[in-house]
Each structure stands twice: as C-alpha cells, then as structure tokens.
Amino acid sequence: MPYRLEEVTDAGAWDAFVLSRDEYSITHSWAWGELKGAFGWRPRRFVLLAGDAPRAGAQVLGRPIPLLGGELWYAPRGFLVDWQDAAALAELTAALRTAGRRAGAAFVKVEPMAREGRDPAVLEGLGYRRAAKGIQPRHTLYLDLTKSEDELLAGMDRGTRYNVNLAGRKGVTVRAAGGRDELASFYDLLHATTDRKHFLVHNLAYYRETLARFGATSTLLFAERDGETLAAAFVLGFGRYAYYAHAATADLGRELKASNRLVWEAVRWARGRGFAVFDFWGIPAAPAPGNPLYGVYTFKMGFGGEVVAFAPPYDLPLSPVKYRLINAALALQAAWRNLRARGTFHDPMAE
Image 1 (cartoon, rainbow, N blue to C red):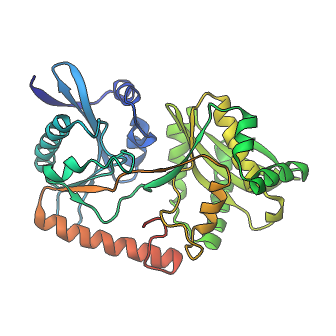
Image 2: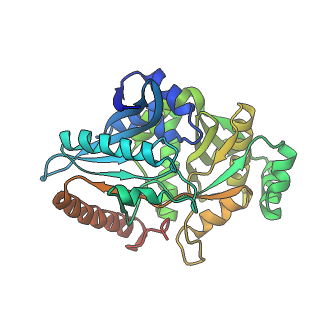
Image 3: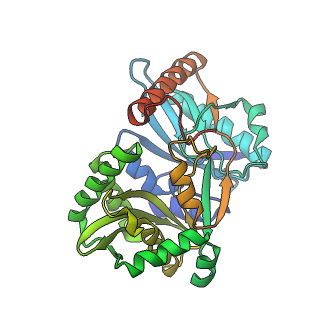
C-alpha cells in the first residue's frame, strides 16, 4: 500500500493522533509546539499515512541557522512510531528527508522514545548517525499513580517518607497559585535556586507562556509556612502523564523539608486528576557523588518509582557540510552554557 506524508494543521486532530499512540510525551503535544513557537522555533506536524491509516508521525521544530542559512530540525522525544517497524521508519525518513531539504534543513535531530535495550538500530541503516548529545534527558523516573496513596508512601525510602511527614508536622502547607501574578514570585525563587544549585533556567516570559499553554491541565504549587514561601513547582499534564517540570526552593528553612512535602502534594494532585504516571523529568545518567546534580538525583529517587532509560539520540544529516559546522557550534554553545552556569564544561545530565 502506498505511503504519503501529510502536514497536520488542526490542534485537535493532532493531539488525538498523539494520544492514540502507545508511547508519547508532552513534547509531542500541539501546545508544546506552540510554546516553542513563541521563542524562535517553527513547529510542524506530520503524519505518515498508509491509505487512510496513520502509521507514524513527527512533530518537528525548525529553527533558522544564523549565517549559514536554512534550518535546524528537531523532533523532541523522537517520532510517534513503532521503533521496530522498519518499513514505517524508512518511509517516514524518506518523506522527512524530502521535506527537510525543501525547507533548507541541515539535519534532523531525533530522540527516540524507545526504552534502552530496544535501541532502534534500524536508524543507522537509514542514514542516521548516533548523536553525541540530545536535548531532553535520556534518563528519568516514573511513578505509578494507579497505586493507592498508602502504596506510594510505602514505596518511598524511609528518609523521604519521614521528611514528608515531618514537613506536615512542622506546619508546611501546599497550595495552588491563586493567579498569574504569582508567577513572578516563583521566578524569583527559581533564580535563587539557580544561584545555589547551578541550574539552567528560561526567562520569565517562557514560564508565563508555559502557564498560558498548559494552564487547563497543569498547576503551579507553593509550599509555605506562616506566609513564607519555601518551595514551588510547575506540574504539567498531558494525556496519562503528569510532569514535575520546573521546581525551586528557598535557602531559608530547608530543615523544614518543604520540598519533600511539595513533591508529595504534587503527586497527590496528579493522582487525584486521573493521571497514570508522574514523570520527574530527568535524572543524571551517571549519578556519582561528584556530580553537581547528585543531590537532585538522590532527592528524586527517594520517592521510589521506576528508572526509565531511553535510546540514544540520532541525527539525520541532510547537508553534510552544514551538519558538521552546526554540530561543532552547538557543542561549543553547550560547553559555554555549562561553564557559565556550573563552572564545568561537562553536562551533569549526560553519561
């Protein structure tokens, strides 16, 4: 049966297709593409049809390439496809290669949402190259929200469970933001966290746009005691997943363990709204004590759950010369960002 690639321009139709797949991410959603579209990316959504039946799809974010011209194409969390379906992957690749070259794309970066150990090796036979680095974290932590609250508490390590209860006994409460005007308070707290823990953060406009795009299925939570904000977090929802997307903590009152209580209430919020999986949105791949994010790793792991590792990222070069030049420039940019934020060229989320 002949295949054809169609571009989807209807938000409802696209999200319905995404949610029909076995594996998907919030980064495949229409709203995610629009969020990125507000900050320099151009989202396009493609579905590969066999007759009238969808076999695969891709949300591709395009960004202009300074000086060289053309675009960089990026498919966050990869294609919407059975990664073992060689025929569909070959057809989708051929169609994207044609569409990408027409748009002047130098390459397509793909992050397969295939579990590690089931790596889509077929990609290398289609002209893809194993990429040195992706953009989304390869490793994350899934918490099963179909379990009861008692089961979730029992699945925590002893210290984390103690801290959740301690914060409650010490008078820490968690509430949802009362309005968008509270976003500035979250951003101030986020910058304080960045200065202390060397995270990379977006500007305020990005978080404002995030709230606008995902506000109907998401929340901004604050942990407080006696009117003092101790911690805050964005929880974003899409389909069966809730994501612990952005979090911040105050330096003051850390002995109250407000962050532990905040995560627990975020889990309860997500479970109460029918989400099936709580995704902690990334843990370091090599969690050793010297890693700048080791504390983040141990904190998240304390809540139990399943460590999930995805296959490595791949690039599909469309213009070999531009691809080499852009790859070198992106590597330098990433190294500079890590040096500026963390004092090291090494990415603490990478292997």
